[in-house]
Length: 258
Image (cartoon, rainbow, N blue to C red):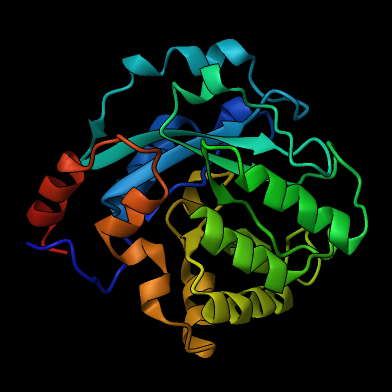
């Protein structure tokens, strides 16, 4: 089977477990949920050490013991880094990143207060310039106003994906105007040929792989599917660090019949 387009999303890379301190499922429970949803790949991305309740840096040092494939799902090891200042500094260094398959970088209220639209945008663009950052997390929150034209242009230039975050569109979200801002984001990405990646940002196993609200928005805006990474293995490769392998995913894709 070719690595071509598929009807269902193949992966979810933004998931949290008990280790993040404010999530409620184990890694195994999340993997079971990913398998039940028919995902080819799942990434877990605990919060980096600056976040209150986050795991100690030592947690990220022993990922080698986790099998690459569990219950028919290829497992990738990530982190959600905190952006620390308006120049884009993050709380993940090159040594830690070397042990990971991908890094999401996000703005979080416990870590940094919002600046101006220009400052917030500069923070995200600066984070993109770290060679190990491959995804900008939930850039959709009016608590951090953004210039989406500049953000999308930078994402295309730096070859970083902008996240459509399913949890941002739920009524229970703490983020502000997520859906409205995501429409602006998609419009800018369309113009600048920037890639988006759909993620659940799950903090409980029931939400792992649930990208339904993202898919509704993609359909409603008629956003080009070729700019949505989740439907192909090439899209998965786009957000993994250079050199991370996909062979297991190719086998799993063939065996699943997706």
